[in-house]
Image (cartoon, rainbow, N blue to C red; front, side, top):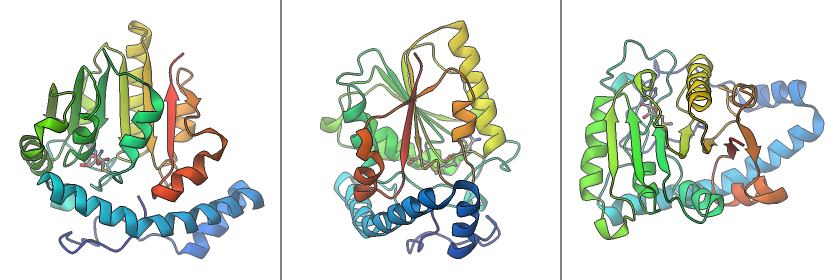
Length: 268
Ligand SMILES: C[S@@+](CC[C@H](N)C(=O)[O-])C[C@H]1O[C@@H](n2cnc3c(N)ncnc32)[C@H](O)[C@@H]1O
């Protein structure tokens, strides 16, 4: 998630997250860690991302209007009624940009027959609604904030049925720590929902589940570049391997339409 102007209905809460470092400080840190060419590349992506931002915001509002749902805007942790013991490993709510799920799911596979789609940290359910346009066997959303979960349930009721190829949708109001992965082929989606320690434990549980029941799993991770830095955790797991779905122009093509990078991993 990036630091952006808040939509009017989002309640800003300055206590909810530490202040972001300035752009210059972030660039300097990035340069020290990754070197000159990676820094230039990130600056170019940043400019493309800035261009995509207004279009993405407009599409987001249009999605809600057209479907009579409410998924837009940010909701901070302090405005959530959470069913977990703590929120210190959690990120706030911000919906995935509209293009992400259609782009990725069209590229990933021709058919999702027999597959379960799982959104870990499903918020107001935008991604769940979009995934229901594909022929999944089942779709599951896991969200620990009761007020967001309730709005997601209402969104699901309102979402036009004729758009849904999959109507077997289950929304769970639970901490991701209590969620048990189904032993089916799966596409798992995470949009920057968890900090490192929690992500590590999720990936470890997924690895154990895969060891007990080997199956095809795709992990789609949106926005891996920010401070939670999930790539070493996912790649260090030893059972998820990167899959290039947009080819060598992956980042440029992606940033033209979206604001964040997406990475896809798969089991062998
Ligand atoms: C960045 S939002 C992503 C929302 C949604 N996946 C999307 O892309 O539109 C992250 C979500 O994860 C939820 N979340 C954070 N920690 C969680 C936890 N421990 N268990 C379940 N949900 C959690 C937050 O409440 C928030 O709704």
